[in-house]
Length: 361
Image (tube, rainbow, N blue to C red; front, side, top):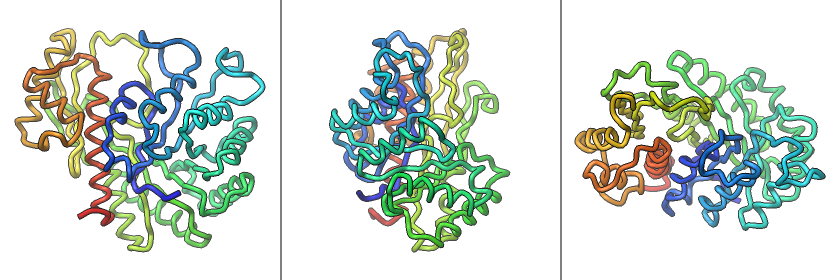
């Protein structure tokens, strides 16, 4: 299985998955999403049953026949979940379920997993026969030799050679004052990996999307630097052409997971739009002052008038923004605008990464 240069980290939630469903062939061919299954808050659209089953069905609808994704079961359902047989771990059943629906995947787990989860992960890796993914966090870069040994222990237990192992270095949130130290940590860790046989793929992922809208004035826009992209570029330059390194990010959603269960009565309209070196955040105002469906056409017109929207047909999401600006379509549902942002991001970043790696002119 070939490695993919772009690995977006995506929680399996409605808005994210609807956006990815519209990915073009060009985006699909260089992208291998990491679908992270989390337990969501209850929604009116829920059909009931296990959230793992719902997530699996969402992956099928959005990514079937589009390539082999990474999948991580982050939250584990309780033992009395009625949709799963209690004799097998949910991760093993997830593998069987998706494989039966013609969606083989590379199982991913962090190196800290133990006990029943670890046993189930190794079982899924062996049964899949297409390799294994390991997600590493910033804290695990501090002692490279120990972390490399843990990686070897996992791969040996799964009977996987390095050539069938994908490593995803997930730095999560990257702050401006961390760039220098993160660069040193990543380079030191990659130097330790250079001493062993090459892995199938290496990906450096992170995000610098704002945690909230507090620093953006009401009804104004801000361009937020894509620090994760800057760090990836710096590391690639330091490594030279022989050190192939894929790029990963959290698309248009911040890395801190919080599927809100509180009231949405005071939510602000917000548009997130990925650009060459920055992410533009367009903020509206409280829904108590104006309904969201009245605010989003104004945000869309602000974006269109700035001249950054590409020609028609670039992405499903861009066409939605243009249609909203022209009053041909509108939604006041924030989940719809996550889909829009995700669709644009997929097309833009996949092409950007391919171009920077010399895959397209």
